[in-house]
Image 1: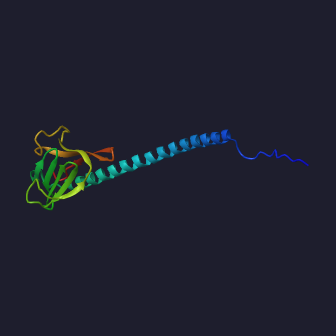
Image 2: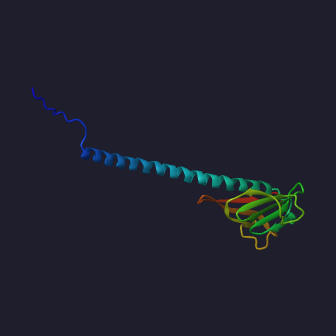
Image 3: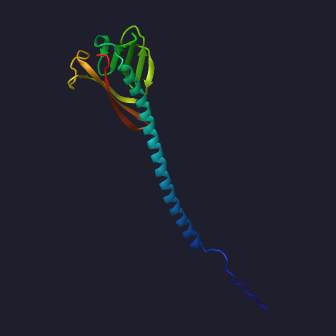
Amino acid sequence: MDMKHNDHRGFTLVELVMTMVLIGIVAFIVADAMLTGIRAFFVTDYRKEALDNGRIAVERMTREMRNVRSLSDIETANASQFCFINVNGVRISFRYANPNIIREEGGAACPGVAGNTLATNIDAFTFSYIQADGTPDPAPPAKTRMIGINLTSTISGESVQLQSEVYLRNL
């Protein structure tokens, strides 16, 4: 008896190539979706870090600046530095030294040269001085009643801008 084997098991080369192409297309689509999610995660994380960095500095400055003893106890008031004596008689200074905000306490004079870094990665920073009627104070601190704080914090290309207004309590 003559037996022929007509049992053709396996895949042809064309079937294997088509399968590999389809798997490659599906893998590309899945990988692109995953990369978009990963990028969004990092963008959000960098913005949160920039926000936290700036928020800590703004909250600290705001809390301490409210305690200016009197207008005559404001020693330096310009766009990049604010130095004053608080209600406890302690000299406090905040200054912008690109890219850091420096806080100094108890120095002999303003501006100080020492101090601790309050925030870093700050791209832009200004103090603004406002009179009781809401207009800018042309010669701070003569009629200053409120101080504006504006800063931009950037981490890995993601920027966050923060603004705050400080109403001086003891005036």
